Length: 243
Image: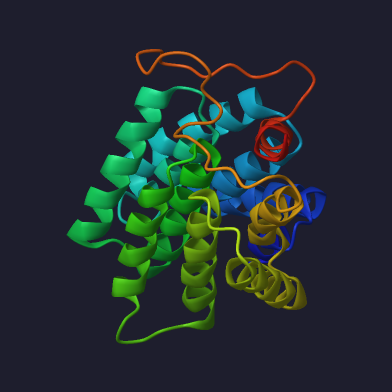
């Protein structure tokens, strides 16, 4: 649990160190179903440092092992990580679609929480505002009978980010984003708060509705989206959203 908490708290170096310790323990115990989970958090932490190639290599390794040893335990989470990190738009679509199918067939509960967070973030990164609502509603429906603070926060966050991305920049939306930022920061959800920060930083710019896939600057038929030299993936998202 240490590396999971560290990742969501924005302590990515600590998360990487925790993943290494957990990987050694899993290897020693022969617990192959847990290794893909370790690699998932290691990959997302590396992605925050701009090491996208290393992150994807880990996610690819995690996908193969999760398919073999833990399809109902970690595969949906790994697929959402692939959707979040990959530059291959077609692969992103396949990962999101398969992840949804896995959850609908019956996956362990924590996969629902993490998959829908990653899917929402991936949609934010690609400017797919209606699709944010789709994944948010899925999470809301899953937790309808037993709502949790985590899911309530993520659903509210998704709604506010979708409204912002669709061009709603009035005082109510900005107040909700600031409220969610304060709440997330207070409880230590720094990683999910990072996209709220992008929205709030862009609030000083003229009202603008962002188009689908802001990171793809050519035709819909291209399978990969280009990245500006000198930026990590997340820094490029921030640069393009705010500029």
